[in-house]
Image (cartoon, rainbow, N blue to C red; front, side, top):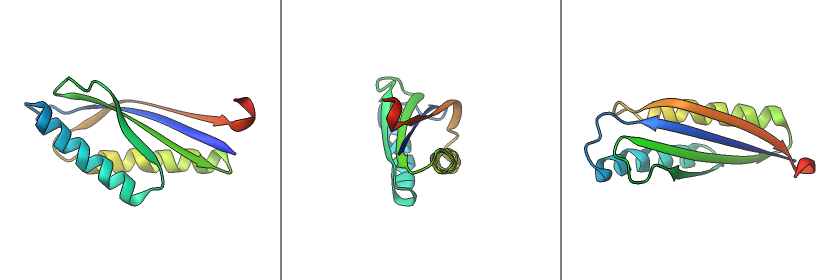
Amino acid sequence: MFVGLARFELFIPASRSLKAKRQVLRRVVAAVQNRFNVSIAEVAYQNLWQRAALGVSCVSESTGHCRKVLQEVEKAIGSAAVDGAEIVERSIEIVAMDDL
């Protein structure tokens, strides 16, 4: 069993308030949750208007499947964040349960 972990940092230049930022993030999180069987949450920069970090995790029987799911999640985040939001940094890590 393998656990896939990803962190996506977003820049939202059109956001002028925390409320506007959270509207964008709600749309992104809902789109990812509706399409994929993953866990996703805002994990950093909660008090910044134009910056966000999303953490995503998935569990699978193979590293290839974990990586593929997380890459598809990245594409979904990019397409769901249509209000000028862009992914400025990403990291993906696959961990075997035997290594934990």
